[in-house]
Every structure is written in C-alpha cells, then in structure tokens.
Image 1 (tube, rainbow, N blue to C red):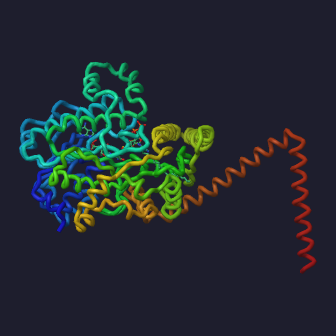
Image 2 (cartoon, helix red, strand yellow):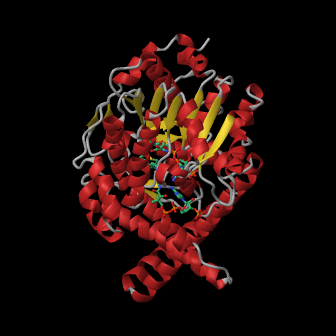
Image 3 (cartoon, rainbow, N blue to C red):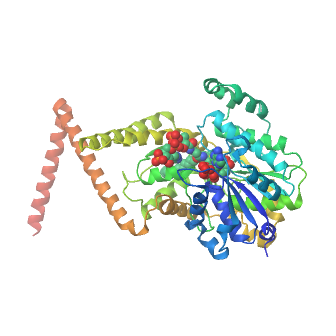
Length: 515
Ligand SMILES: CCCCCCCCCCCCCCCCCCCCCCCC(=O)SCCNC(=O)CCNC(=O)[C@H](O)C(C)(C)COP(=O)(O)OP(=O)(O)OC[C@H]1O[C@@H](n2cnc3c(N)ncnc32)[C@H](O)[C@@H]1OP(=O)(O)O
Ligand SMILES: NC(=O)C1=CN([C@@H]2O[C@H](COP(=O)(O)OP(=O)(O)OC[C@H]3O[C@@H](n4cnc5c(N)ncnc54)[C@H](OP(=O)(O)O)[C@@H]3O)[C@@H](O)[C@H]2O)C=CC1
C-alpha cells in the first residue's frame, strides 16, 4: 500500500495553475492514485468564451484523464472550479468561495505563474510575487492546512553556476519591488528593469527568485516546501509516455525543427540539457506534499527536480536523437526537410539566420504573393528567431544543482512509494524518452494521425528532389554568369566538357571492342 496515496485520501486540495501543463499532470496523478480524495479546488479564470466549468470539464474529458475515469468515475464531482484571477485583489474570489477554501483546504499546491521570458516586469511581479504573497496570507487563515507546496524553477538563481537547495537573498527586497510596482509607471519600469534584474536573463527567472524569498519570509508557521524543476518536458511514463500540451521549453522548437523552419540554433552541444519529465516533477511534488505534512521539517526545504547531476544528457545528443526520430516519424506538410544544426558563434549564427531562415521565408512569401495569397512566412520566422534569442541563454551554459534534499526524500520513501511516485531520473533512458517526446509532440500537440506517416515520408522525398533541383539550377545559373564574365572560368568549363567527351568516347570505343 502506498503511504503517499493513502495520505491524500479524504483530503481537500487547492491547486493554482491547474489548467497549465504541470497542473493538469498533477491533478491526473492525484485522482488516479488517490481516487478517495475529498475534493480538488482549482482556481480558474474564465477564458476564450468558456465558463470555468467548461474549461475544467474539457480537461477532464481529454485523453490525459482516460485512465482516471476508470479508477475514479465520479471525478467530475470531486473537482470544484473556483473563479479566480491571481492578478486581482483577493484573487477576485467571492466571499462564499473564499470561506469554503479557508475552512476546508488541507494542502495547497501553488503552480500558477507567468512563464513568459519577456513579460513586463509589472505583470511578472504581480503573478509570480504578489500573488504568492496573497496566497500565503490566505493559507495562514486555513485552520486545517497541513502543507503548502510552492513550485518555483531551478533557474531562479541561474546567475550562479553551482546552486544549492537554499533560498538565496535578492539584491532588492521583494516587498520594496512590490511597493514600487504600485506607483511607478510602465515607462519608468521599462527603464529600470535591466538594472533590477541585473545578471538574471529575464523577468521570469528574476520574479521566480523574488517569489521564493517571499515564501521564506512570509511563510510564518506554515509547513512549506519549494520545488525547483529544471526544463519540464513531456511525460516519461505516466499516464502514458510523451504527453505534452504546450509550446514551452523544447516543444515549440521541436515542432519548428520537424516542420523544417528551424535550420540552425546557437547552442553548445556539450552543455547539459537539463530536461525533466512532467510526471517526474509531479511525483516529487506529491511526495514532498506528504513529507512536509507528515514530518513537518523545521525549516522550509527546497527540492531540486533536475536531471543533470544524476543522469546528464547534453544538447548535442538530444538534438541528434530529435533529428533521428524525424526520419522514423516525420511531421506532416513540412516546409523543408528537417535538417537543423548547432552553431557556436555569433558570425555563423548571423550567417545561417540570413541564409537558412530569412532568405527562404522571403522567397516563400514572394511565391505566396505571386499566387495571390497572404504572405506569412517572414512573420513566423521573425517569431522563431525571437524565441531562439530568448532561449539561447539556457542552451549555452551548464549548471550544477545539488540534490541532497531530493535524494534524502527518495530514501525516506517505502519501496512501494518509490515505485508509485518514482522521481529517480537515473532510470531514465534519454534516447527512448526523446523519441517518445517527439512522438508525443506529433500526436498531442500537432494532433497528427500516425496513419499519415507514409504520406509525410513521400512529402519529404518530394522536398528532397525539389532541393536537389533548386541547388542544381542555382549552380548552373551561377556558373553561366561566371563563364560570361571570366576567361579562366570559360577555360575550366571547356576543359571539363572536353574531358567528359573524351572519357565517354573512350568508354564507348572500349565497350564496342569488347562486344
Ligand atoms: C546536432 C544536431 C542538432 C539538431 C538540432 C535539432 C533541433 C532540436 C530542437 C530542440 C532544441 C531544444 C532547445 C530547447 C530550449 C529550451 C530552453 C528553455 C529554457 C527554460 C528555462 C526555464 C524553465 C522554466 O522555468 S519556465 C518554462 C519555460 N517557459 C517558456 O518556455 C516560455 C517561453 N516563451 C516565451 O517566453 C514567449 O512565448 C516567447 C518570448 C518565446 C514568444 O513570445 P511572442 O510574444 O513572440 O509569442 P507568443 O504570444 O507567446 O505566441 C505567439 C504565437 O507563437 C506560438 N509560440 C509560442 N511559443 C512558441 C515556441 N516556443 N515555439 C513556437 N511557437 C511558439 C504561440 O502558440 C502563438 O501562436 P498563435 O497561433 O499566434 O496563437
Ligand atoms: N514548464 C516548465 O518548463 C517549467 C515550469 N516551472 C514552473 O511550474 C509551474 C507551472 O508551469 P507550467 O504548467 O509549465 O505553466 P503554464 O503556463 O502551462 O501554466 C500556468 C498556469 O497559471 C495560470 N495562471 C496564469 N495567470 C493566471 C491568473 N492571472 N489567474 C489565475 N491563473 C493564472 C494559468 O491559467 P490559464 O490556463 O488561465 O492561463 C495556468 O493554469 C510554474 O510555477 C512554473 O514557473 C518551473 C520550471 C520549468
């Protein structure tokens, strides 16, 4: 019997960010392993013309929850969507809902965040810092609360090379930052943002670091833990391999490479690709929730959920495996044949961006215009180049994250819990994982059918022929122009032609003699 699964039985659990990538996998695992839990409260904002209920039911009716329905047929009754916007005061939660949350909640999992690297500092502070502060205030008024689990990121201190499982102080106190956001206007915030974030790469990592300090400073007597996942990728095993539903992290770039848009990427092949599967993060999170509530550690423990120090994989190996998988499982209607490569310096990056990214986009848009259609490739390419520039920081460096607390927790679990809530990345086979990841991107993100693979392969063959034809034509035109202008080129050309002629004549004569 799993002690962790039993622990969540009968519990009322509050999840923020439940509609996000990690939140969905967390809910799924909770329902599947503890179908006797009392209720999961999810703080949701209405979106895209859907009511809260519609948003939540759409998630429950998705493929991800197929197994849940078998073990927990009344899952729809066990989830309670609470209208909330974390950007608003008191999250704009109604009085009745607030009362219910405060009086019943046993465990809080705080996953909501803005994960955009380029978010305006005001918005990133509001969601990643102020909302965390407000949630802690709410938690302090929950008499039945047993644990508060805060999801941060392993990159919250990525300005350091070696990162321990501790909360690092920020140069400017979070309270001062929160206060200043109230009276500074957007233009001034824009101006001071680079100074404030200092050696952090973006407002995301900066505000996640501030969020951790808030958790530590304002956690009071609560049982709190912080989890720091690295780059969260598709699921490894549960509920099935390769599940992914958004473009963050590597997923969007895998699509861009598979569709042939992404041809070159500035990355250090030997740098550690610290990916961590979403189900591994969720297993650790649930184990931490149990440990924090039952063992009540004296201080706030930080858990690194990373792969680099236990089972490292580098970007070179990952990239090659992604490309190898495209051979077996190509994406449909590719723009060009997948053939991406890494560049390691600015000059080659600029060169390949011009030749392999911008030029084909301009040519294709010209063709679209000629055929009376709306040009769109240049816009798409600009967006891709912007994304590449945002992720470059993370794929050209390696970090060392210590994992003492995570390893301590692993050894504190029973063998059954180690199996059911497995977060031991040493068991992960990267090549298999990456292949499943690419397959998952195709199935769950692109919604492509496996039956279309033969046609996709045919399409790639056609693209290869077009590529050869295009290159030959380009060569002939260039050569023709050269011959017209240079006597040396003309001499070389006549030499080659007469050599070929002589060779053919000799070949024909010798084959006539032999006959
Ligand atoms: C030797 C052989 C080599 C072969 C190479 C083979 C290639 C293999 C590919 C694998 C490469 C792997 C590289 C991985 C890099 C991963 C690094 C990630 C590092 C994370 C560190 C921190 C981890 C975390 O803690 S947080 C989670 C990560 N957060 C994110 O990933 C968010 C990043 N996204 C953003 O910040 C923004 O979306 C931004 C700035 C990238 C783009 O903003 P913009 O305003 O331009 O667009 P959006 O409004 O967001 O979207 C508009 C539009 O674009 C679509 N879109 C969004 N993101 C992506 C994307 N990443 N790729 C493609 N498309 C994307 C989005 O859906 C919208 O589409 P619409 O149709 O317009 O709705
Ligand atoms: N993905 C990754 O690679 C990594 C993620 N993390 C951390 O994990 C956590 C979850 O990330 P992930 O699931 O990937 O992120 P997603 O972007 O997929 O999900 C973010 C969630 O936050 C919710 N949210 C955002 N703004 C608001 C708001 N104003 N009010 C209410 N809810 C809001 C979103 O709701 P809605 O659906 O309405 O937009 C969504 O449910 C974050 O804390 C992130 O920092 C850490 C390391 C890596």
